[in-house]
Length: 323
Ligand code: FAQ
Image (cartoon, rainbow, N blue to C red):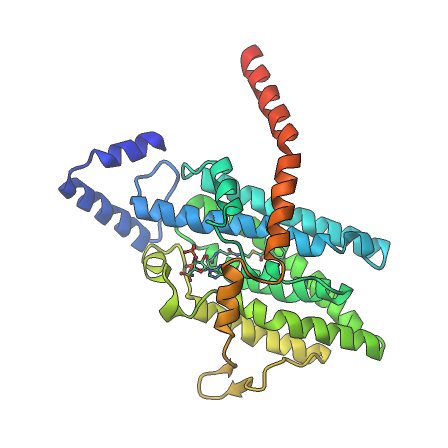
C-alpha cells in the first residue's frame, strides 16, 4: 500500500488525470477496488473516515446493551443478548481490519476516537433505561443499520463490501430478537405495553438520525455517490426504514410518536415529521446524554487491555524469531 501511494505521488499531472479516469471507469463498470489497486488519495481518506467511524460505532454500540446483560430477565434472554453484543464487537474488528487494508493504523484510529476527531453513530449516546430498550434497540437500531448496510454490500471497495455481507446476516438475527422482545411485551400486561411504547418513543427519532443529515446538507455525499462508496442517499435510506418500520409497528400495536406520519398515495411512501436537527448536531458534537460516559468507558477499557496487546505483540515477535 505504501508503495502504491508513493508511486501516485510521483505521477505527473497528466498521468494522475489518466489514472483517475481509469479508476472512475472501473467504478462505473461496477468493478471492485481492491487494496493493492491505485486509488485517488481523497477516495482512500474518505473510506478510512467512514469505515473507521463505522467500526467505532459497532464497538461503542456494545455499551448500551452490555448494560443489560446482568439484568436480562431469563437465562435464555441473557444468552441471546450476550451473543448479540459479542457479534457487535466482531463487526468492529472486521471493519478495523478493512480500514487497515487502506493503510490506516489501528492505534491512530482509536486515538482519533478518544480525541473526539472521529465520530461514531449518534444513537449510542442515548441511555438504555429499561429492558424494553433492548427490544427497541434491536428492532430499530439494528433495523436501521441493516437498511444502510444492505446498500453498502454493493460499495465499491472490495474488503468493505465483503465485510458487509456477513455483518448483515448477523444484524438480521439482532433485529429479529429485538422485534420479538417488543412483540412479547406488547402481548403482556398494561405495564409491559407501556414500557415497550415508552422505549419506542425514546428511540424512534434518534433512529431516524442514524441516516445522517438531509442529502442537501450532507458534506460527503456527492463524492461518496460518485465513487459508489455510498449507493443510496441518506434520505432515500431513511425513507426505506420508515416505510418498513411503520408496517412492523402496526402488526404489534405500537404507535409511532409522530403526528405528521401519513401514507402518501402519490409517492407510495409515508410522509413523516422533521427531525430535531439541533439535537442531532449537539449529540454528534459530543454533548448528548451519554457521550462522556461512553468515551470514558472506552478509554478505560482500552487502557486496561494494554497488557493483552503487549502479550500478543510479544508472542508474535517470538513466533517470528523461532519461525
Ligand atoms: N452519527 O456527509 P455526511 C450499528 C456525521 S452500526 C454520528 O452525510 P457520510 C450496529 C458524518 O460522519 C451504525 N455522526 O456523512 C449496531 C460526517 O462527519 P465527519 C453505524 C454522523 O459519512 C447496532 C458528518 O456528520 N453505521 O448501528 C451521523 O457521507 C446495535 C456529515 O454527514 C455506519 O457507520 C450519525 N448518525 O454519511 C451496533 C454505516 N450521521 O466524518 C451495536 C456506515 C452523519 O465529516 C448495537 N456509514 N454523521 O466528521 C455511513 O453509511 C455514513 O457514514 C453515514 C453518514 C450515512 C452514517
